[in-house]
Amino acid sequence: MVLHVKDVTKVFSGRGKSKKIANDNVTFTIDEGEIFGLLGQNGAGKTTLVNQILGLLTPDRGDIHLLGESVIQSPTRARSICSVQPQSQVPLGFLTPKQAVTLIGKMRAGKNYNPKRLEMLFEALDMGEWANTEGEKLSGGAKRLTAFCMAVIAPGKLVILDEPTNDVDPVRRRYLWQVIRDLTNDGTSVILVTHNVVEAEKAVDRVAIINRGQFIAQGTPSEIKSSVSDQMRMELSLAKELVDIEIPNWALSSHQNGSRFVFSMDPSKVPSTIEWAKDQMDRGLIIDYSLSPTTIEDAYIELTSKRVVAS
Image (cartoon, rainbow, N blue to C red; front, side, top):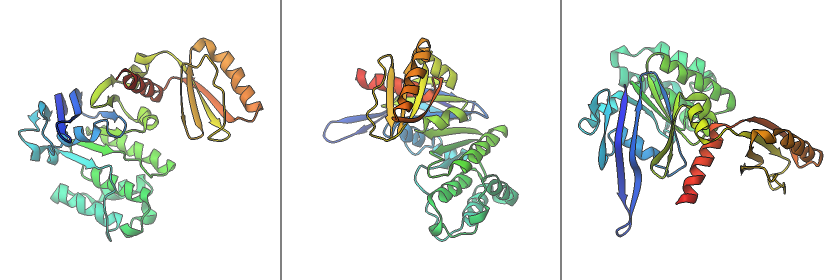
């Protein structure tokens, strides 16, 4: 076992006597070579939890063990074991990606630094065209990939990636997920911190959904999906974001993101739903549609919406 987080609670004081519970009795483990997804909206408590794993914050209750030793007792050791890509962009200044990654690699690996690993990373992520471009002239996606390489050029036993694909183009995102999986083949464990549920489902071995500081679900993507329901989902591409579309009364839940509209239904309603979707296309209200089993995104929305309603 690489990481064991047990009953961790962290509370911050607000104005007056108010308090905010950032993490509430959180418990989970990560094994060697595992990709563990930490899913949650902004403010759910993800960053606070990561900072405690790194020894940057101390839990008010509970403990964290990294490779068998308490992070609370040895916070500096924890940071030497972990490699981190923060959510914010790393300021490169006039350093080129090649210079920045080489610098971090030599700092972490010392005499064991292998420049061939940099070449391998840059080739795997197709970064050659701007490897020697000054940081101030790079796009957001190029800076993001550079920060990722800085985190994994000499990876610790645990790599923490906070929204690693932000601003990265779709093609290089695929390359990035493959590099992350290659890391685990060497025994490195990964924590993927994200709110991009669609990507996470394809990348992680296990996942935890955190909402208002609590883990409300934890397991493999299949276990998370089956814990909610055995439903089908219809995804629509609307002709316009504000198109007035009347969702069928058999829809169990629905949500919209721009021109993308998704709703779920009982499997017995699939034939009726297909006929309904064809009618919407004939009327010019939608561009296309797809039908598939429930995804982890659907489970995420259903689980978190239930908590919001219940509170």
